[in-house]
Image (cartoon, rainbow, N blue to C red):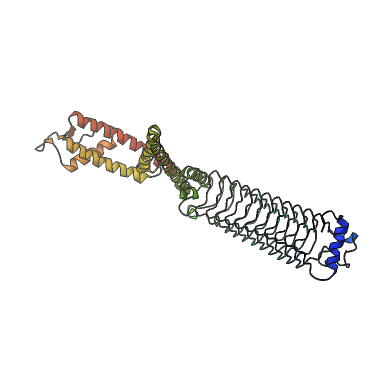
Length: 449
């Protein structure tokens, strides 16, 4: 049909084809700018009881074939397009408000900016369609197929999308505010900055999806699958994620406060650690630590703190290796020192969280210094038949233990002699003071919890 045909004549010609009684088979037709609203139909003598669809009062196009057609800026409000074939149509800014699209096929269509508000479209297919800035407010689209669709800026506010399939969809800045997405498939979708405020996502699958900067305030996520999802910079404040699957999810920069979740749900590590992005993993564990502190889960917060410190060490190791490969000796030394210092602190006290490791250090150093006293031969028995240097392990260990735990050398009938031995005595005493202070600090932290 010539695009220059006046709208009323264009509508009349299309209505004549419908009035012929046979199913509309107009693949590749040009319906651009067609105005077929209820008012336009009534004005053309095609209103209620005069050929209009008895269910909707709009165009009767059930099972019609309009595939690969052109319908830019057309008005199909209230049309009955049940099981219609609209594959590959070009319908930018077209109006479908209040239409019936149940089981219709709009795969690979270009419908950017189209208005689907209030449609009834159970099992409709939009697979691979271009729907940027389209509007689906209050639409009924249970089990719709939008897999692989382009949905940047699309508005699904208040829509019923129970069981809908968004797998692999590109949906930056998409609005799902107040929508019902129970059991929906949103796996491997790009949902950056999507708005899920007050939406229901019970048992929805978001595994592997990119949810960076998304807003979940007030959302219900009971039983949702967020395994491997990227939740970086995402608003998750005061949500209940206790029943969600969070295995290897990413939380770097996420807003977590009062959020219910447990360590076991993470599968042993956050996604950034699994990907060896250790700097981001450190930020992820920091967000988790602060959240668990906010809900009083101190054991979980301690776990996240230690994992975060370990990620910092791994990152330092990465930087040291990179500097070594680049022959940056200064950088290699700086990062290598940081790695070594963190590794020592982890061994000594697990970053200030383990009393048993400090006790282990005490025992080990007592044995080491006892052995050194024996090597130097600088401990002598002052009186009795055994007077002179002693190499008895019990004498060496008892003197070493008491020297480690007291401010002054112990008086137990043994006396250090020689510069080397006296230096060892002073060094062991200093180390003992440091370890005792560290033990008291860690013990105090544990008691406060």
